[in-house]
Length: 364
Image (cartoon, rainbow, N blue to C red; front, side, top):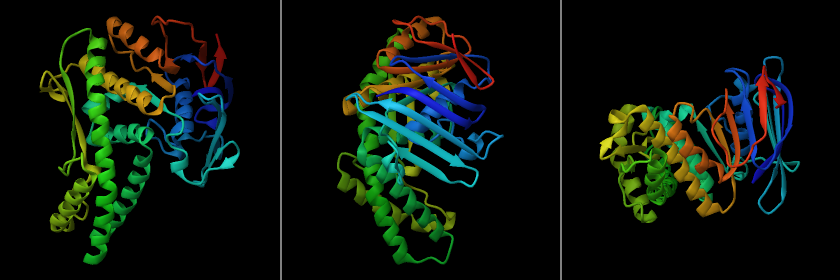
């Protein structure tokens, strides 16, 4: 999958933009605040329907406009052309179309165009709260496993209903129904999260040592809030259901569901020591890059198609040795879009460069 053309209207500080891209991608250079990251955000929206910066749609609409519109022309690996358009306005109306056909469900949109984003904020995967790590799992697994995203959406729906019930006049029979659905869909998500971690752990270790040119041992551990045998989906569902039943009184006192996939976490270890407490910033950034690269390997295994990569100052704080290791690992795997004030790392083949200033883009 490659993006051949991007059109943006009234998206953040971009009033009107129409760019053609080579299959290799593009490098966007410019000062902070010029609009480089906004271009990458537009590409991510076209692929996922979400902002990699967790931004709300209203914040992405240009201050001079009542709406934003983004359109991209993609070419699949089988040469099939795909036109994706995404529009939204200040009345919170959203329009999504693929090849001029309206898309009514987010499940029809998300994950169809594989993409991986690298950014400075990725350090939150190590230092931040568990919800950053769950978001990474959700975005990655939704692109890997077709049933994951549907199960996640249904789980979220029934979780919201259960939490509402816990704050109102309580109906045990209704809660039993919600528990059953949460166990059913939560077991799917737990099982697939566990599969992903097991599939990626070897490459996670390998990539870390390629980046660092060392022999340190790194580990990633999936820490579900409900401990069950994830190799058996049925057993996982049964344990999930029993746990919800057992913790119901606790949940009633807390007024929310205290256990489930919405409370899961990931932990990283370097030489058996917690990275969050004992790792240097360079080691932590290398951990994050290795995690992202290992997810790429999983996508290549499951999807067997080239991906789009967004690199937003992700390697800016690494030393030259690490930079020289990271770029080749990313470059050969798909179409690259790089945003940085100045890009000086060596590339195996030239990528078109653009200067970005005040939301306008000029080819160098």
